[in-house]
Length: 429
Ligand SMILES: Cc1ncc(COP(=O)(O)O)c(C=O)c1O
Image (cartoon, rainbow, N blue to C red; front, side, top):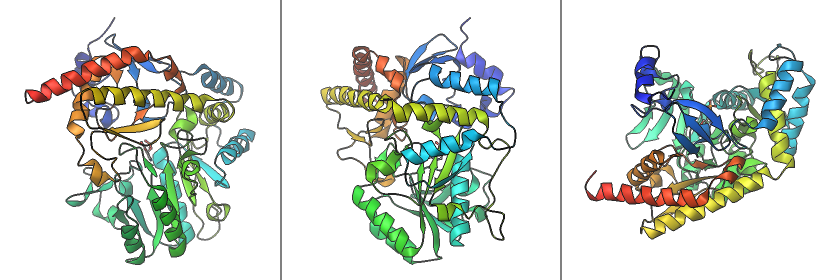
């Protein structure tokens, strides 16, 4: 029987803070409770169906409940097991595949989430350089651990919330994307830098992207200052190209982090890079420690093996790009029809929509876009069965199964939604 979301949330609030198991799932009375997921969409507990471009914040690259991946995982669970605290022959097989797709990776370790992968990469960078200070490009997101839960705002550097000791920000400084002079200044002044951390295509700022010139300058400056370059490809990895953003730019990091698309929704992550750097992970004096009970468990590994094989050996990614391109064109037609100034940032598999005259080049540029109109547009789309994060910092994510979406229907929904959003604005809502 279909159950109203507000009723489910009221009950859940008695058992969980905010009534949810992850704070970002709290949308007030509109919080979504899912009944079942399939392909490029889902059915909610109240019976509504959605085409989904949020895709769980990006991990779904093939589609929900992809039978090829699911059956590989079930097979591994039934024939090998889940967790054993030992190595398996599958470890090398999966890392070999990643190295083929991302040739800058020479050695690799696994993790259970993007957060953990970033923690591992930063620790390795510090262990290797024997420096503590890191530079982080503002507008990016690198996970929910204390040091990465500071962000640069107009008021200075502020925490994401409570519970974050001031001491956790003392080794982090922020730089602006596409500001080569600011980068040089930060590298040349203050304590020596262990690593610069960035999302080259900011999956957490509407796919606002580094320019190729900036990427080249960044690479050169890091090398010159003895700082490592960490590219956080948790969202872009295996999504924007087989080799991620680094293939896209032809600029390569010392350390890279991956998660999301590498497992089509199974919780798996990894970090890796130059062998000389990764080999600092050791039991030698001063060696870096890495591990964990669930690291490279067989559910994660078998999901990654199956997903990466499909991404590497079929034209699944080409389909994702093509689907994204068609959506971009469709949305462009709708915005143009209503005279809404718009730009798209990032690649077809995960583009951001920005209501602005020019493509934003940094998070500061994003602040000048008409983000409230985008949010109003998304809320109207959600009412009509098109699920998105109603925040223009979250890109539209595409998966292979979106090939099935009825684009005529979607264009109609987009028309109705923009008309309603503009009407509401006209009357001051
Ligand atoms: C670029 C980036 N890095 C790290 C993370 C953290 O990953 P997780 O949520 O798996 O811990 C995210 C999550 O969205 C991300 O987008």
